[in-house]
Length: 74
Image (cartoon, helix red, strand yellow):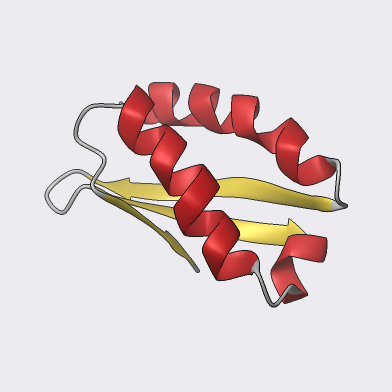
């Protein structure tokens, strides 16, 4: 499961990197279905980071990886 999450994040990363940001996989809680990531670069301090996390990263992970219910930045 974690491998599929990491592969999917690799597909999302170029979108974030275009604007000077990045995302790093931290962990996955299979019981809760929550993926923990760390936003980096411009994303780390961006006012729109939460929206990017939910509307881009979380949406794509939910569509691509069965069992993912949410994504949080740690």
